[in-house]
Structures are given as C-alpha cells and as structure tokens.
Image (cartoon, rainbow, N blue to C red; front, side, top):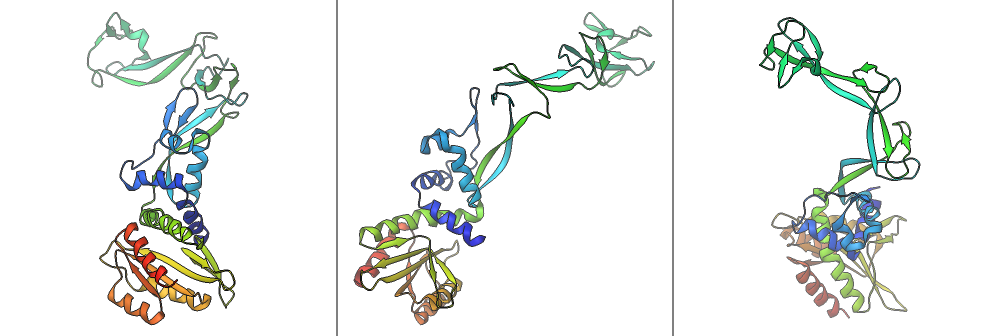
Amino acid sequence: MLETNKMKRAELYRDHNTQVFLSKFLSGEISELKPAYDPKICYRYPIVETIIGDSTAEDFLNRLYEAGILERRLYDKIVYCPKCDSVNISVHYCCPYCKSFNIQKSSLIEHVKCGYMDVEGNFRKGNKLVCPKCHEELKKPDVDHRRAGIWCACKDCGKSFDIPTTAHFCRDCHANSTFEDAVIKDVYSYSLKEEVREEASVGWVVIAPITEFLEENGFEVESPAFLKGKSGANHMFDMAAYRGDKTRKVTVIDLVSSTENAVNEQPVIALFAKIFDVSPDNAYLIAIPKMSENGKKMAELYNIKIVEAKNQKEATKALKDKLLKRK
C-alpha cells in the first residue's frame, strides 16, 4: 500500500498542474486551501480553477488526497434538493403538529422573586419588562429575572411547543424535503502533509527537470520505475533511464534529501539492496544537500555513484556531467 501511494505521488509530481499547485504551498503563498462560496454553484476552489479549469478541481484535489500528498479538514456540508439537485435551499422551522413554518419564536422569562414564568411578549410593557403576576418591574437580567429557554407558537394551528421540526425548501423547483430525504455532500479545506513536504519538493523540483534532461539526451525514462530482480521481487526506483537498441543499458537513480547537514548512509544501504538483486548497468544516488562521509565510503564500496547537490540546477548539471562522460 505504501509503495502504491508512493508510485501515485511520483506520477503526480511529474504533472505540470501538480507542480504549479504544490509550488503555492512550498513557497508559502498558501498554507491551507479553503473553498470560496458562490451563491450560484455553492463552493469553488478558484486557485485550482485558474490552474486546471473549474470542471475538474474537486477531482484533482481528491487525487492528491488519495495519493497522500494533501490532508483535508471538513469545512462545511452542502444540502442538495433530492428532486432537482439544486443547492439553492432554505431551512424551514416547522410546527411538529401541522407542519406549517408560520411559527413565532419567543424567549421564556422567569421572574426569580415570585417564580412566574411566561413568554417574553407577556412581560413586555413598552420598553419595560413587568411581571404579569406581581406587577414588579424587572431591571437586572440574571438577578431579578432570567431567560429560561425558547417557546414557539404556531400561527396556523395555534399550538405551542419548544422544539420545531426542520424541513428544506428548494427555491428553484419549490419542492419540500425532510432530513430523511436530504442529499448531503461534504466540503473540505486542504493543506500539504508535513511528512511529504520534503518529498514533494524533491519530487517536482528535482525529478521533473532531470527526467526532461535525460529524455532530451536520448534516454527512455520511467519514473517511478519498477524493475524485477533475480529473486523475482519487484524493486522501485525514483527513475530508470534506458539507452541503446541492441543491448539496452539501464541506469537507476534514487533521490534523497535531508534537513540536516548531510544525508546519512541508510539510503546507500537501501539502494544497494535493490541493485544487488536487479543488477543495473549504473546506479546513482542524488543526495541533497550532500552525502555524509560514511555514506560516501559505503557508496564507493557498493559501486554507487553519488551526486551531491544543493538544488535542482546543481543536481541536473552534476548528473549530466557524470552520464555524458560515460557515453
């Protein structure tokens, strides 16, 4: 499963639309992508629409989410009309007895001193509150009187109740529906997963230009690449470059980066385990920003070529120098 997700991510990193979109996270232009409300079509993602077009924005974001590049947070829920699929819905609070939405909502007030409780309208005398039972004026909320809840009255059937029922009214087709009939869709905001931020940076900033360089120089490139070893197991590499018609030579390339001063020897060991089974013609490990001394010694022992680079430009140039010398 992890390998499958990594393969999906690697494919997405090569896509130009993904590169443009992720650059907005990596540059700090956006930290969280929130939807914008449009009264006609409900929620949209304008930033994504400017990159790929409006019709596929949600599909695009969902692919990045399923590949493990983005994480999402529930932002809102949309209620659709079950009859015409419109989002132009209003909520009606209705009488539980006759289902009319012609109801009057009032506050219940309790006079603390005498204990009398009634709806606020019966306490009102002009701009004052006066207890209908003892006729004392109420001046201090939460001292001489308190709000004890909500009370509703239906103007059609005349009955009173505390909790109304909820109904949906479609302003487009005028259909009424209940919660049981409702079609509800989740709306999300998106952010870049911290654990793949470094991978994403390497993935589109480094892999894409190197792939382009290799193809321009006559290589056939797969990224990611799965090569079958002598053991029968398939091994994944960040890139595999093929050259030659009669005797196809294969060069495998892995990339690794570190937020520390140097990459440790573990990626060297991991790459050696794969090439020991696959036996490619050449193996390169691109280390950003550089490889540790132990890693360099192990790479030399395992016949792995190390490419050290601080950025994409340096990585492409160094790899170009090494590969073209072997032509």
